[in-house]
Amino acid sequence: MSSSGPIDPPPGAAGPGGERPARNVLERGTTVLACSFMLALTVVTLLDVLGRDLLNKPLTGATELTELLLVGMTFLFYPRLAWRGAHIAVDLFDWFRGPILRWVQRIVCGLLGALSFGGIAWQMGLLALRAASYGDVTPSLKLNLSWAMWFMAAMSAITAIAFVLAVFAAPKEVPPAPEPL
Figure 1: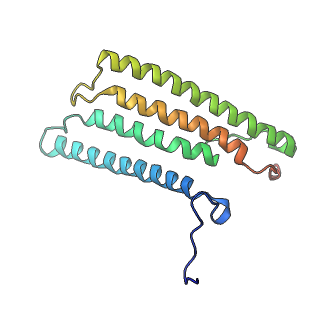
Figure 2: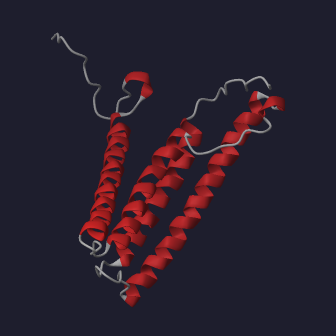
């Protein structure tokens, strides 16, 4: 059977460049959702400013919506950044380390990232339990705060897992460090 277009790999099989389709769907899904939150944040801000300036009446709950949308946007991006190693890194000492020490550094940094986000997940879970037991809600819109905290806990746990997986999925060979200036 021939086809004029590219053939999609079977589910779970590696695609072009070793990419996994399920991971691509998750990455794209979270990215689209985070970008949707950013668009909603822009609309909320625009409506709030227009309401303040033109009608002398700000958008009710704009501050709460802004906070929740920022939480959603940032925590949705964390797993992608961890998996791709796109987090901020300062490489001050690459010029005197060999490939083995850079490999060890990648493992240590991945484990530190996993421990950090694991700790955040644990603490956010505790805070979510407490917020749920107290019935905490936002002041204006009366939105349940424990949902946002559970979301932060879940995304932090996923980020911790992404840090660990990134350590084991990264190539064993580390490219040479750039020459010092």
